[in-house]
Amino acid sequence: MYLLSLILFNLIIFSAGTKFHATSNEGDSRYSDITISYTVWVGPDITESATINITAPKRTPFYEVMQLAMKKDPYFTFEATESTFGHYITTIAGHKEDKAKNIFWFIYNLKEMPDPNSPPSDDLLSPVGVDGLMIEKGYHYLFWYRIWKS
Ligand code: B12
View (cartoon, protein in one colour):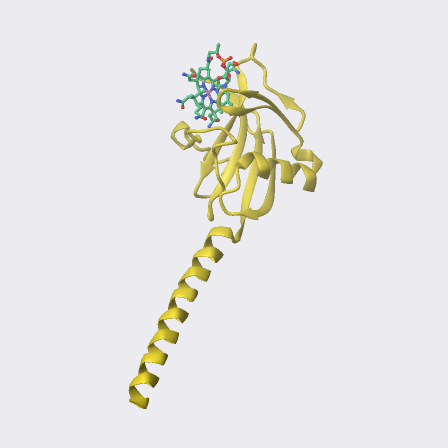
């Protein structure tokens, strides 16, 4: 009887422990900080370029990452307007979109660090704006001031 209750007691402790462990792991992965790179390219020929690393909780909206970048390095100062889809970026690093010249700011989420010798194609453009784009581990984010080929 004593042996049986000892086994039962151990079983309860073991299963409770496993459960607790699983829950704490889930919490760690959801709220852990990640570091991503944020690059700015200016002009179709990329005459100006800057990269900053930002650490923030996983799934932070990119708009908040831009605010952190601006605080860390004033080069990344930006301006935005608000519309139906959220924030729309009009200016970064003093370069304002130019409707007459058809030059705008475009955001890409990339699995590799952007390389000026092999610029990303349009299919790597983010499908959403800076409010809808949540940062993920291992991704690199690029804002490119370039001509809109419509
Ligand atoms: C034209 C257009 C653009 C032009 C805007 C030129 C300009 N400023 O004059 C350009 C090519 C620059 C553009 C850029 C982008 N766009 Co756009 N664009 C459109 C399009 C085809 C028409 C918008 C329009 O003229 N509406 C008519 C006018 C009268 O209404 P409006 O409210 O004043 O329109 C303005 C806003 O829509 C704003 N705008 C345009 N795109 C975007 C994107 C976001 C996220 C925001 C907040 C505002 C915004 O610019 C318009 C003109 O001022 C829509 C598709 C659609 N059906 O709406 C996509 C659309 C709005 N764009 C989209 C996206 C994703 C982008 C980009 C984020 C793409 C990227 N990866 O870079 C960027 C914005 C980046 C940034 N700078 O913040 C998505 C938004 C989806 C979402 N849920 O977030 C849409 C819906 C297309 C789609 N289905 O994928 N876009």
